[in-house]
Image 1 (cartoon, rainbow, N blue to C red):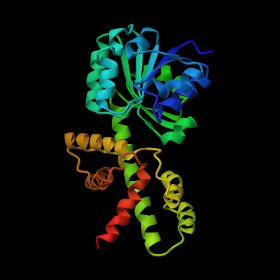
Image 2 (cartoon, rainbow, N blue to C red):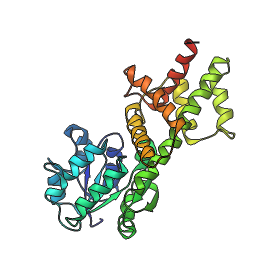
Image 3 (cartoon, rainbow, N blue to C red):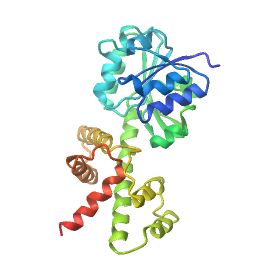
Image 4 (cartoon, rainbow, N blue to C red):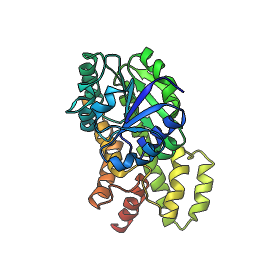
Length: 294
């Protein structure tokens, strides 16, 4: 059994299967999440429960966080009953959330003053990637610390990459999200076009998946679109949070992203329709609706 005592905070769509994979690998795990019932399956599988992040920090050598947005990470790490209140020097915090690069650096400085090392480690691969431990994990921080925790990360992901100093993991993830959303748009537009033209969508998907248009997302989301399955592997609301972070950072570095700004507006239509908790493949409905306005 591995020696490290791991704390895991945030057991949502991505965090829960990641934590389960650590348990399967034999790690001693203490968990905390805002809604305790979301951790029930982990406790039943052998994890210990802690009432607060501070309680997690008391008994952990390494803490992994997987929460929604920048304020959530700040609350967990630096807030009342947060990790910083009880953490021992030498603790390593690995944040797998997708949050602001600038705020990540600030939090890292505050923690470092207490002898705590923060590693930013945003993830890509969706719920299936988390379940199958095939995530791509983009890590920023001291390289020696990243290498120290690599065996742990390899229990949750297939591609573990050191991207540079603290914050570079987040910046890499934002670049990833730019590419992802354009692939989602191309999938939605291509299938909407095929549908409107009277093509058989199953045949269209088979052909395009075998040619130059092929992508992981086309293969993953195409069948869901054809089946009318809009259950979230990744929610519209979370995609919009990521796009907000992208556009904020792009403004800071003075890099125009005209295509990304357009996609953000298309997803905003879904949010206005009350579909923020649908999967990102539901973007096809916005494309379909545009045809009704002509």
